[in-house]
Image (cartoon, rainbow, N blue to C red; front, side):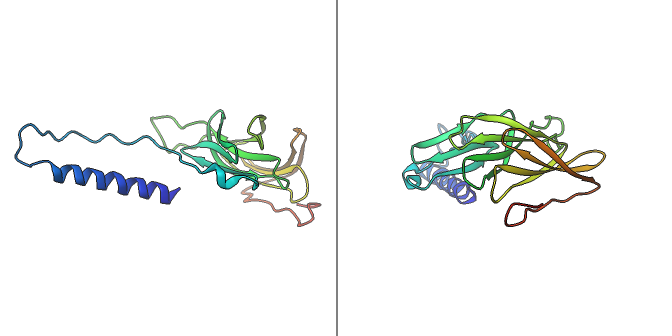
Length: 186
């Protein structure tokens, strides 16, 4: 995405420079109008995904799924970050938080983990957390380890795609958890 943004900036700058060079500087009919910022654009090549599953990515806090059939935007109730595929690519977990208030754009907001089907059609909240959320899928099952930061104590839980939760531990300053390679332990 950084390459796309850099290329767009280069094209915009080159186009503006070419326009400025073409106009005579002393012509009173030419005015220097401010250049409006271009709207974010997502361009894709869905054909390369045929036979290869799907690509999940976030751009401007919107979740997109790119499949051989095309690009799909997933409707979520906030700003998306950190998409993670399940072991079998049937499910996608994504962190979602509300936009911060305009008065303080750096204010952290509570985060939730949402479950999205591979087709982008099934969307539901799995876990509601405090101000920081991390997670990782089991390498063998449809279970997600979720580490939630909170005001008092952090918590590690295992959440199944059906919504069943198992509390593992609460502690101060938990920075994450890891699955064993066989998915039997955290």
